Length: 435
Image 1 (cartoon, rainbow, N blue to C red):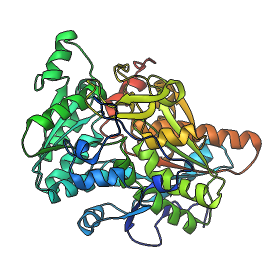
Image 2 (image 1 turned 45 degrees about the vertical axis):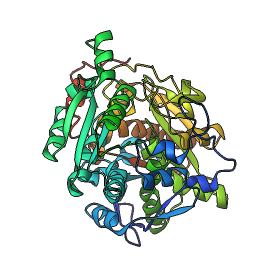
Image 3 (image 1 turned 30 degrees about the vertical axis):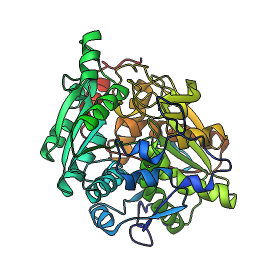
């Protein structure tokens, strides 16, 4: 491959199966517990908020699950996504490292989130559900579910974390364009939202609060189920189309990764890229290193503890064994709304516990500094979430320069930042501060 070749297409079409990493865990993952009884959660418990077909995926230990053809047909709107060689960034850093990024901003919603939104909307439609309720942080997930619901002719209700609702109005407009209803969370639409507003009328909101509101909405509206954009096993599994494509693309590039990087909030985009490569490490002994990157303002893996905790603030979800800062943790109002979550996906947490993943955390001013350099080198403005991965990649590339060694780095550019430009303007004007 020429040093100037940047755009690499996979050797095959869209993947036909999702990969379930639970099948290859060196030791089993702790099961979720019922919030009231503290007994292991059953399929029947979960079907109160999810359709049974998705619950079966959540509990599955099958290694591969076939992707339904109607889902693959929608994926074809943007998949396969490109793998790009960041040659201009390499030159800017004067590094011998080879940097590749999987560009999930190519989707209609501008991020990786439609990979699971489309699947969840399809399975709910198959189960006879007519309306989905959800939460969203920065809005990538809410926009993706709004798109998926429109494609499958379903209603969509989104509780958007208030600080992002105000910071990122264009994502709200995007959801409206695709037919969704959107309210800032905490809202006056639910009992829990009203309780939160009573305690603090100026609450910036959190993903934990928004999840509680969406679940309350689900159980009080007939024909409605809940959809989650990250954390759960089936959500992470749907994202593995990213890594399956990337493995073929790296083969086409004739290179083997040394380091695989992704930002982490709930864990889904990191899982999507890394899990198929992790399969190769666990089952074939590949020497890949995995690096998860989070904000210093919400350092779930680097400062949290591994324990059972609720996924929401009200304590309505099953108890999950995960790294957590506590379900009542209120993250500072940073511009990276998609990473303001108190807990980490159980599958990511389990791999971190087993020592198969490393983790780092950065302050937002440092992240935006590197995001600007990436944009000025590669032309793509990364989402603030993705910019955390960019920062870790740059540090890895500089370490390679100091060591005078080639290092192949692959990361997930999980979304573009064209609807986050107000955050960039805040940084460029000197108004951004670290929490």
